[in-house]
Length: 128
Image (tube, rainbow, N blue to C red; front, side, top):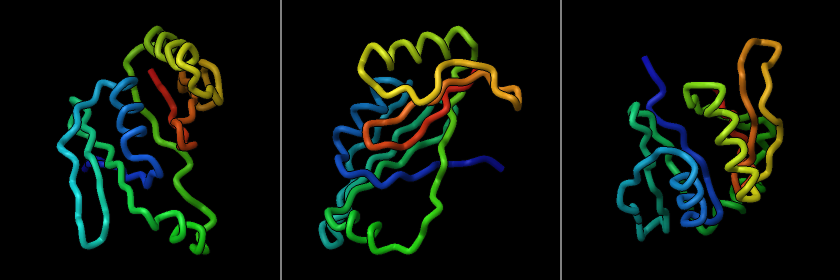
């Protein structure tokens, strides 16, 4: 088994697509649009086959606000292969004004990682 994709509701679909394509080695499909539901999405693909689905509906913020769910996805992690790549990508985020939540370090459970926030507040661990 493997994780095929994760899906993220976003407020600004094009801005989020641009962010993920700029900083991660991803490719994108053509935009999907369902006129009846006013739903649009992109699938962004890693070379490994894993994907991120960015999804948008104009009314999604109302749905999320009315939801009683308090616990959501804490973060997702992207492995970049080496400590040096963790460090260089973290610096690239910093240079581009991306919020760094945690600088590069070895965690208590043995990961070498940094943590950043995407433009809409989703947390991403950058691991070796």
